[in-house]
Image 1 (cartoon, rainbow, N blue to C red):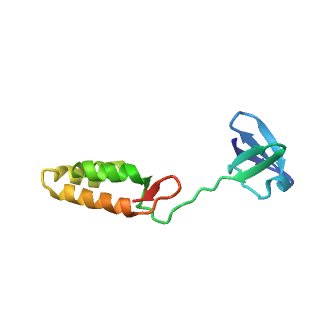
Image 2 (image 1 turned 180 degrees about the vertical axis):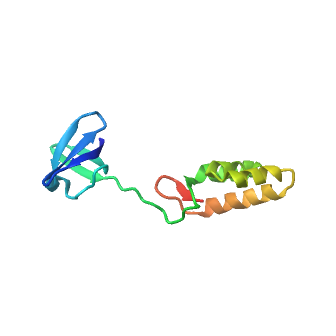
Image 3 (image 1 turned 90 degrees about the vertical axis):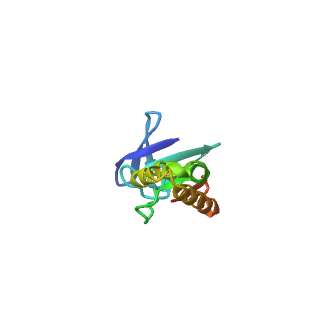
Length: 131
């Protein structure tokens, strides 16, 4: 079950769960000290309850996007001549440039190369890469 920290006192936190119920949990049960708004996950295994804080990781490459490796590679190889893979990543300007020059063979060749590069990149546990 997922929830968010909605209040913090000296000894406990109040977590609002996705089902609308709130729960007071002591810091000793959490094992960490969250902030207001932190996302918490609750796992119940028999008579044992574990709480984990969801972690948001920010990547230092601002101009790069996290995309599905398979989707990006297929779009780049098959529809790269039209810049579809660039639109998929959110690089609209580059997508339009590919589209404008789609009558030449250059965007198609570049799309195939970008697709091959994407295939060669190591994906994370969800199958995503940084493009």
